[in-house]
Amino acid sequence: MKYLIIAALALGLTSCSGGKPAKRPGNLDNACAMKNQRGEWFSEMNRAQRKWGVPVASMMATIYQESKFDGTARTPVKYAAGVVPLGRQSSAYGFAQAIDSTWEWYQKAEGKKRAKRDDFGDAVDCMGWYMNQSKKRNGIALNDPYNQYLAYHDGHSGYAKGSYRKKGWLIPVARSVEDRAILYQTQLRRCR
Image (cartoon, rainbow, N blue to C red; front, side, top):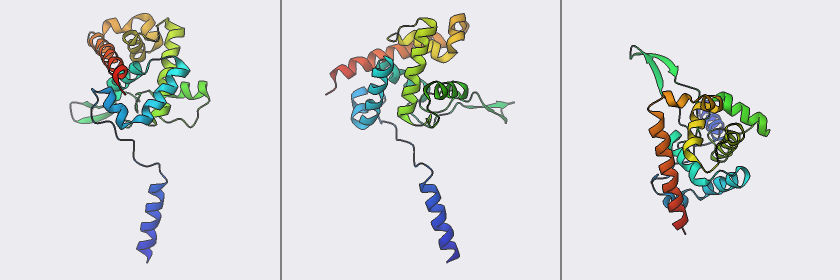
């Protein structure tokens, strides 16, 4: 009887802890298939687009690059001498891979203390808000996924200083985000 009570309590506690993260779509290269599988995500992205002016395709391309639509994504662990774990590369977490300080800034600015990085709606709202800040602070058009991604990756002050120019690997990544945004936009125009 004692073990039965303990098992029931454990089951009750785990059921209150939030549940499993949303399963990501099967084909990340097909916006229409994604829309069919995760229609509620598109409702959230459309809401963020109306609020912040950032195109859905740009948000999708950035999320693809940052987390591959995995709400529990984290940066890799760094190792000393290839063996001793030193911790993660950054505090980035969730769909949008927002770091702790950016997420806290968003929560404070928008009055969303309960927003979570592994909640798709919260993540795209934060992304739209951040890209809108990039427009205000750096003059980057909301429909410019290339420069928006550079500012998203390097931060507003890093972008203003041109820090991305010293990262030869980052320019092709930003081009890839831009190409994917164009692909998604073309596909979304054809979806039913």
